[in-house]
Length: 249
Image 1: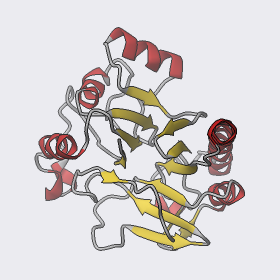
Image 2: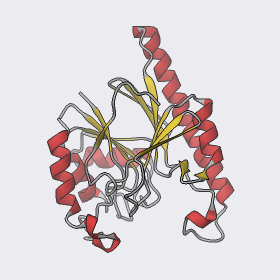
Image 3: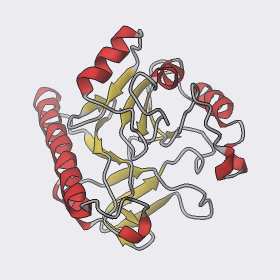
Image 4: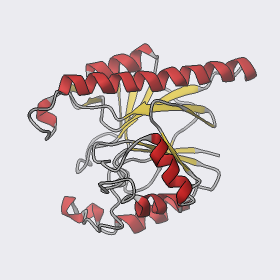
């Protein structure tokens, strides 16, 4: 049983939003995603999808995209991205899954999950550098970043509780991994509020998405003892990335 990660599936099965306008790598991406995923991932594995799951504008509109993910091999832990406008309350999402018979989907939001050798935590995150995003000019960016830092802290606090519980019961201390949609540290840009939370919880591995169309960069960079790994689907050629149990920075 293994843990994988991949973000930014950008599904649009019901609305048929073309993604090839963002580059030829997106041509036929759903078929390639399905083929690569099912070739690598078994029914007993888990895949974390770190945001930008679907272009749908409502949770009911995302049903076919979620069904596509449901029908892929393995269990899935889904985080929220900046384009996930369909994302609503966890109760509504859980009810939606129950109503549609989706049994392999779980949602990462102010909580944490134990998966094999790891504990999964994370949040959406956010940019604070206004030059790096196209957002309404009247948005309170500082407030948004502060809120996302709190959500990450809530998730990591739950992860620590779970880690301690497992340690007390088994004597095994499982590593906590952080999954965000926005990059906390990327090409000179640092979201200090988010990074401060990661450092406070002694996180050594963080996985993020959001970055598209840049393929000549390292998959992983290390900054102040934290390894940051880019997991956008197009960057990974629509192939889930396996996460090794042991890792050296």
